[in-house]
Image 1: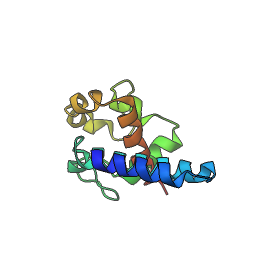
Image 2: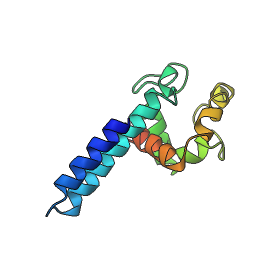
Image 3: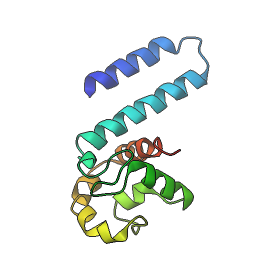
Image 4: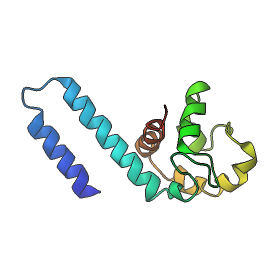
Length: 122
C-alpha cells in the first residue's frame, strides 16, 4: 500500500506540471477508490459478507449504494455506529461484530470505503 501511495504521489507530482485541476481530481478520486477497494477486501474484510452484485450474508454493494443514495444517508456514520441500519435491519446483529474494525479506521479510510461502495451505484 505504501508503494502504491508513493507511486501515485510521484505520478501526480510529475503529471501536475502545467496540467489543469481536472487531471488532479481524477487522480485523487482514483487513489481514493483504490484505497477503498483495498480496505474493503483487506483490513475491513467486508468482502466476506458483501459482493458487488449479489446478496451473500449482507446486501450487495449495488443495493447499499442505491439505497443510501436514495435516502441521502451516510455510510460513514453507519460504519461508526452513529446511525441506524436502513438496509435489512434483521442482519444488523451480524454486522455489529465488524464495528470494532470500522471504528478503528480513520475518517479518511471510512470516506474511501464509502466512495468505493458508491462506485457501484447505477
